[in-house]
Length: 167
Ligand code: GNR
Ligand code: NI
Image 1 (cartoon, rainbow, N blue to C red):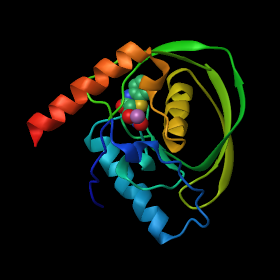
Image 2 (spheres, rainbow, N blue to C red):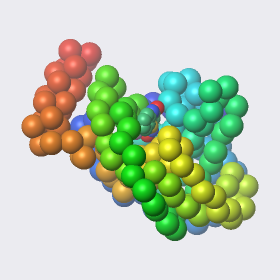
Image 3 (cartoon, rainbow, N blue to C red):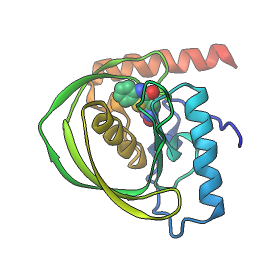
């Protein structure tokens, strides 16, 4: 396994739309395992391939307290949504920024697992929020896109300044 580098806002590569995985082969499984390692190391509760500069529809998630319930979603599709919930979200690609986002509180999703097996499951609360946050990444969308233009431009200014000082 290998730890992957995470792209930071406003990197334009975070705006790419990811392509469906044609076949869940060893290359995709290696990506999944590297993403899990990167997510656990960060630490984060989710990671989308877009964030590690791979334009494929692959997501890893673990919202468990013990960090022992990995969930892999390849080519995820939202089948149904219900209710709403506001959560203070953060993102590994927008470090240090946390703000409230409203999303569906219950969802039904279909995807392929790590071995290419199709499955459907329901999710609620934080897991539902996390799946929607990660599926947004696959569309090139970030949680800061739900904030006001003023907040987003402040966040972008601060991020560019931090990147200048780091380099
Ligand atoms: O680690 C993460 N925490 C989080 C908290 C609230 C809502 C969404 C998330 S996902 C985030 C990791 C991440 O950036 N995934 O793309
Ligand atoms: Ni994120």
